[in-house]
Length: 188
Image 1 (spheres, rainbow, N blue to C red):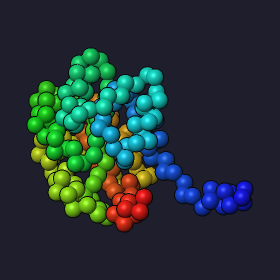
Image 2 (image 1 turned 135 degrees about the vertical axis):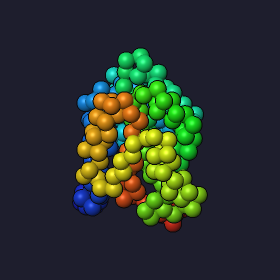
Image 3 (image 1 turned 90 degrees about the vertical axis):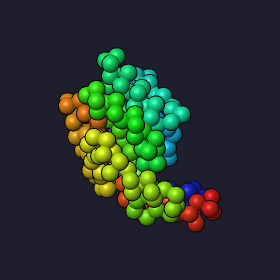
Image 4 (image 1 turned 90 degrees about the horizontal axis):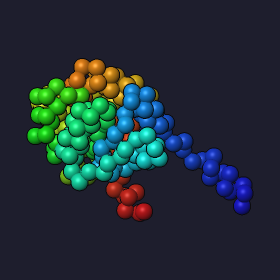
């Protein structure tokens, strides 16, 4: 019995380190407020912030609330981050005029759907429209498709947002997150 458990443990894939690396980067740049809509791609990062007594995590009813919340945080002297999925970017479009026109920093970390290996056709339109929609609103966009580059991409985006008072989004591609498989999900 102990041998079987040991064998399963050895066969289990190692957890990716990039969520923990993002957490450390965001702590290092002074993030104190996290606005988010629950998302499986951000789950480890969210749990890390929820366990951190120095950080306030606010669960939103819609992603656009996070843009306004983080503008208020900035005016109150704190830095924050908006965690969302690409399907929620469409909910933010009008509100993105706030940081653009008022020259306020906004850091968004977006987990992508409708991207590499997507199984759900409903995710494709906004997944493919995420980058052009953000760029059309004046948001600087950095996409990352390699796990080893996630932390440095978030670091660069945070520096850009908070040093230049610009809205910046990091898109974490499905090559990093792993594409969902409908057949596997149906078996669970």
